[in-house]
Length: 225
Image 1 (cartoon, rainbow, N blue to C red):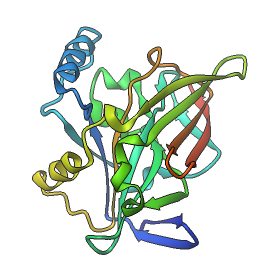
Image 2 (image 1 turned 180 degrees about the horizontal axis):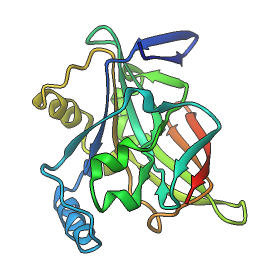
Image 3 (image 1 turned 90 degrees about the horizontal axis):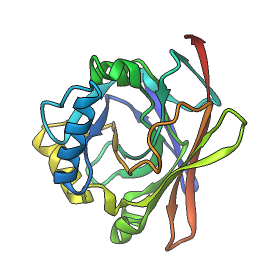
Image 4 (image 1 turned 120 degrees about the horizontal axis):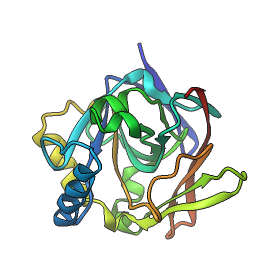
């Protein structure tokens, strides 16, 4: 059994995790997404079968530790909006995590590149109902740790860059995803200056209306080049 416990306001909520997915290519401007896919193809990264694309990942990949181990020097993370679905249809939470990916393997098989890396995830969440009316004002922000141990801004945009929440939920329904006790890494915002293979990542989901934020921070240790 794979369980994941998250703090929601004053309560501890435990999910008996049945499935974990990542939604790729979920940018709001799908024409720009398609242009980006062409650019990636020129770098050797194969085009997805569908846009957006749903990638299943390991239930055991959910990671809440401080130092994540990876194989290879070309892995990187990025801030993702994460939806956590509980036992009932109205039990939905939102948090922040990292779709850490092996960029070298990505040129061979995108789904495998996601499978081989753990998925860091914050241990706190908000009820979706508490942010639904100002969803697009939420901001995803991230920093990457450089070779000199400096935190460099990596991402900083609102959820207007991602498909609307209603479209994400409709897409999951279209794909016939069983949402009960499922966790979905549902999208990210553009990088400021492209991929950086850093030694650490700091991620935040910021609510400017309530001035609250959810955070996740982790280091990266390469156990084999």
